[in-house]
Structure formats: C-alpha cells, structure tokens
Image: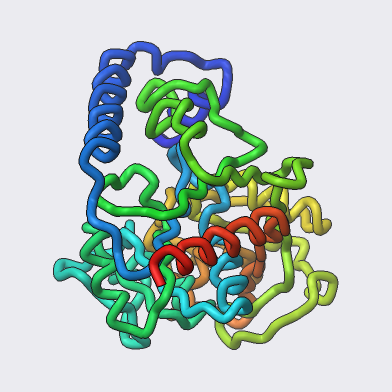
Length: 326
C-alpha cells in the first residue's frame, strides 16, 4: 500500500510527498557529496573493465533484461563476463558469495538467482561491490558487469549505462522521497550511455520483447500463441513496475485478472491458494515459486533488444580499454 501511495505521487498528480521536501534536500546533499568524493579521490581500478548498469529512479526500469542481453552479446564477442549484484531481497549473512546450484532465490535474491539460471556465468552477491569484483575475478572472468550500482561510488567503473523506463520517465523529477530519483537528474549528463525503453531513438531506444511461455514446473517452452489461456487465469507479479507486465500481456492478447505483490515478494503456497489453476507470472516471480509450482503455472520469457549503436560502442570502448591496459 505504501509503495502505491508513493508511486501515485511520483508519477501522477497527487503531490503529498512535497511534505517530505526536507528529506529530499538531505538526500541531495549526501549523494552530491559522495559523487564529489568519487571524482576527487576515485577508487582503484581493476585488472579487467567494469561496466555498471544502473538507473536513476527507484523501481523497475528493465535493467535486468538489459544486463542479460549485454552478457550474451559479450559472450558472442569472445568475452568471459561475470556479474556482481547486491542481492536485494536475499538473506545471506556472509559475503562475498558466489552463486551455485545449491543456492535459492531466498538466499541470494531473486534477480541474481534468475540471471544465474538463465546465463550460467559467475555471479557474486556482495553489498560491498568492490569486494564482489575481486571475488568474481577468481572465476576466469575478463569483464565484469555490475547489476545496479550506479550510486555505489566505492566501485571503480569504466563504463556507465543508465536505464530509463520510457513509459514513466523520471516521474516528477525530484529526489526521493519527494520523487523517485536516487540522484539529481543532471547525473544523466555524466553517464556514458543512456538506454530508454519504448523510445524511437536509434542510439538509446530498446524494447523488451516477449519470447515464449515457459512452464514453471516442467520447463516446457511454448510459443506465445500456443498456450491456451484459461478464462479464469490470473497474472501475478512482485516486481518494481507491474504495470509494465500488464501492458506486455495486453500486447500479446492476454486479458486476465491481475494481482500485484510487493517488489521482491517472497511467495508462500497460501498466497496462491485462492487463484484459478492457471497462473501467469514473470520469470522473476517464477524462481521463487518453482519449488511448489503446479502444472499450469507459466512465466513469460522476455529479452531486451538493444540498439546496435550501443552494442558496437560498448565493444569499441572495451577494445580501447584493452589497448591501453593490455
């Protein structure tokens, strides 16, 4: 409920969050000071290039699909990427932690675990990002991608990518808690690349496209038009921007009741007991439900189609890094 109240103010006409303006001033002071410290006394670089993929706003922007597509592109170019993540929503107490098959999403966080299952590359969870990089470098990695971390200035970075949700933009443009911004909007002037979903720009625009339906229990894959949707089907999502999932379902002709849960929600069997037998969800939800999934639970597999100009520029930047540090 609280999350919805804030989103209504940040992205709508309800402006009650202006009452919290003194807190936004404090956030601005702290973030600007951290940024200045980073610029005047930058952290030590690593033996491999580090790419930070983050965002300026709170909530989902499509960052994780971007990371996954970027990893696949780098693999196609002959690189050996590794990922570091905060592991938000996990319950680990000892860091750094290299994700393995014995882990669960409850331990390491839903997004890192989902990427581990999808990509199979080394992924280290650690709130101290620089320490996480040192750990992942022990696993035959020659480029590191930080999933989130744009505001973690203890981490050296060679390339910064900021992902923006094209449907919501920067909201009211104010720092949290008055608005959704983690830093001043002028921070966009400093990043190397901006990727904006639902944009027509050939340089910045990218699309997150549905690919297939995957059975949560069995792993069976069906084409988008091959799954028969039950009239009583329910779509669930515990993500930062569930409205985006609803729009995607609508685009592929799926009309059903939707039930939203808080971001990073840790599902229990009883949460789904009152729904029909067919439940549709995101891949992020599926990694937490797989242990008690029934035969008619499906997640929508998606992929980010990144602009060629961006991918070619990243490759060029990495080649320059190699020539200067090889």
